[in-house]
Amino acid sequence: MNLITFMMVAMNIVAIALIAVIVVQGQTGAGLGAVFGGGDIYRTRRGLEKTLWQLTFVLTGIFLFLCLITVMVS
Image (cartoon, rainbow, N blue to C red; front, side, top):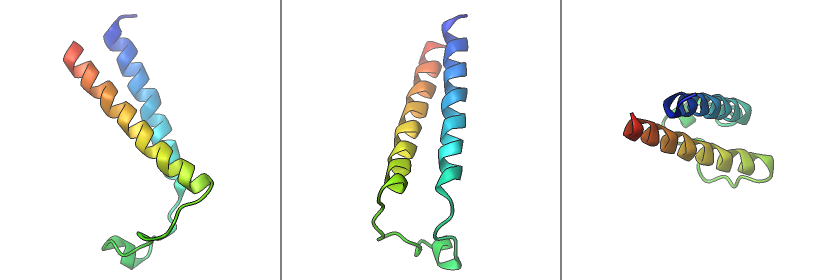
C-alpha cells in the first residue's frame, strides 16, 4: 500500500467519523430563526454536547490537514 492510498483511506475514515458526529449532534435550534442565524448562538454548551462540538472542529482540522498533505504528495 503506497502513501496516497493510505491517505485516501485515512481521509475516508475521518470523513465518516465527521459525518457521524454531526448527525449525532441533532437539530436543537432548527426553527425559522435558526435559518437566519438567530438560533441558539448565545447558549452555553455543556457535557456531551460540548464534547461533540469540540470533536467536530478537531475532526475538521484533521480532515483538512490530510487533504493538504495528500495534494502536496501527489
